[in-house]
Amino acid sequence: MRVIKLTVWNNYKDLTVFDFFFSVLGAVFGTVVKTVAAVVTSIFTNRANSTATKRDNLNYIQKMSEIRDGWFDELHETNQELEHLKGKQYKNTQEINRITFLQEQREEYKNNANEIREEIAKETFLLNQDTTENIIITNDNYHILQWNAFADVISKTCPSCSRKMKIQWPTGSKDLDFFWGCTGYYHKPQCRKKINLNQNELRILVDVSSPEHSITTEELDIFIDLPETALDIHTRVQDLISDKHSKKEGVNIVCCPTHGEPMLLSKKINVTGGFLDTYHLKCPHYVVGCGYIEKLKSAGQLAALLKHETGSGIL
Image (cartoon, rainbow, N blue to C red):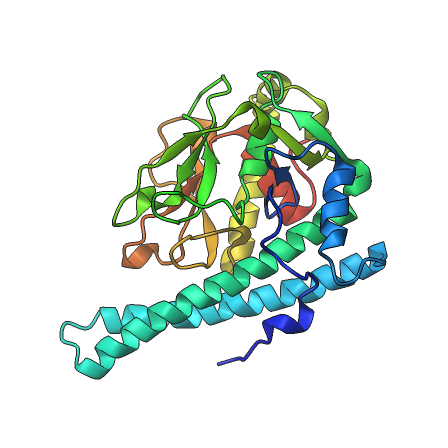
């Protein structure tokens, strides 16, 4: 088992002082967020190194990414052992105690990985601050929210069960019908907690350098419905699935809230809803009964996935 010193690369004095939320992609959600400068100031106030250059940012992100992946490896080993022990029909006292220990260890590893992921998000925000704008989400541009809601929002937790929450919306919705949904919906004991986004939470700070952010939601939807566009996206996603499968990798900006590991990109077995019902992300431990999935049901999500994994979105 690899031993990782979390504090070696910790660049922040206190990771809990921020009263807004970072997505893993570096977008910022929160009721007090008004300007890019205000967030930059908050980050630097709580940052050990306040004079870092962009090269320093990139080097730091690379180092932190390596440590994050190390925690993912530790989580995988822990989950594998847990599955083995839980799968035994008869367990002795030592094995029962071992299961308890491993469950506690998994929570510790998940917390460590998430701290690292949040640090990476902050550094990503600093790196992209020159192309970051304050965007108010409306019926004309809600694909920008769907793009940034695709990734995990690290610090948003359910007030009922303390699990992670993610921004959700009804499939096919064309309105601002967004809400925070508890990720415990797919787990036992099930949690169905929902919290509607308020007007302040429909204001986000986001990197707008991708061309998808310069058009309307309707224009993006029309574009992906073009036969040649749909074929190109299908080809690229299928190639990405094959590449991830060969490397035994998941999508590291979306992790299972129970097992803590990156989710696996896959094609659905039964496709009933057309193009935007073809692919989803599932927990790598789905074979032992983990039901957590992330539906890829919007053009914004697909664009974010392709941008993060290949460097180029849909446009």
